[in-house]
Length: 304
Ligand SMILES: [Mn+2]
Image: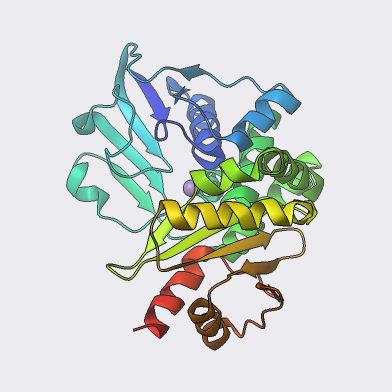
């Protein structure tokens, strides 16, 4: 009875760390389990593969083996799951998002709690079992908590995420430097090509009346050396997506501050009313980290 532990296809670090570490925990308690990743993992996972030489079993989606049971981590619906997974054979789910997984997976034991990272739930299971993950997986779990909570600013972040990170620091001598390097690695990708980064993550909000909302999440402020390229790109995206007006939200995870760019008068007024933005040359600085998913509900409400 071989168990496959897996997240969504093209997983982020949270899903990846959970799959490897939870399979490790199951093996340490005598179960026949393996963690496998399908597709292309995200850039923060690449950081651990390239800079820490951590071996991660990665297979193309569609690959199958002699798995007879399945455990989903950082996922709780069949949407985006690898083709190998059979929903009636899913025996367990570990996730942290709103949903009703019991409908899709009637045979699964479900732990779904709205905290910052699924990795936190896996760390808690190790603590409860009085066992420790192998050191490489401990690094992945630690990075995952920082990444999924965006250095502890994301909306669902809880004290449990901090406690799990502290446990890994104490047991493995890890510290914030690892997280800083991981975010640096992703930031360098953005700085090499801000145009690509903006376009890849472009979103529109509203119906009929559309607001273009672009976001960059960086560590450190070097990206602002390319202010003109950023302004130019926003103008191009603005035309391409035919929105009424657009804003760019740059979150610096190091200083935990936000910089907003908006060249439209209506947009500037709305941002002034909701966030207290004072614009100078179409840019404004806020003393708090504001994520796009926090800003946009406030804005759309203010605009009626
Ligand atoms: Mn997650």
